[in-house]
Image 1 (cartoon, rainbow, N blue to C red):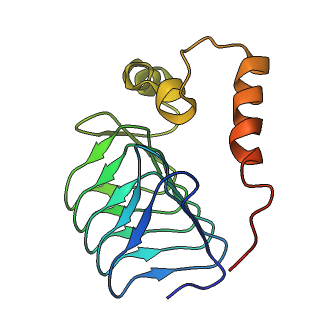
Image 2: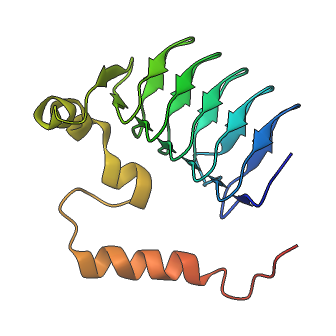
Length: 161
């Protein structure tokens, strides 16, 4: 069931399993190389952001959670309110990301947001710019935004279904 959510395949695919609920203002985006794959019996809460992520059966993705491209959330895991599963991170089955915490790495280390240096020590090796934008770290903003504008511009004539 979809309740005012946005599912967009962009240049990839989106697959939603049986008995899933995707709530209002949630975004599920499939990307080339990083499809959005939602298993069975998954709840995705309001304002959650699921971008090129794989979510296995029975997961709970709470309000405002953010799942980045290339991440995998194991069966029965919970990502609580405003929790983050970072790019190319693998969250084990049954794991819990507490309210506002960050899961990072493969396998995931789950850290409080005030542990930025520890998060960054893991995250910097996960290739966020390459995975999300297809560019090398350190690419200038003009080049990056030109690429992003062109990518989104390919959809300027799209119409809602």
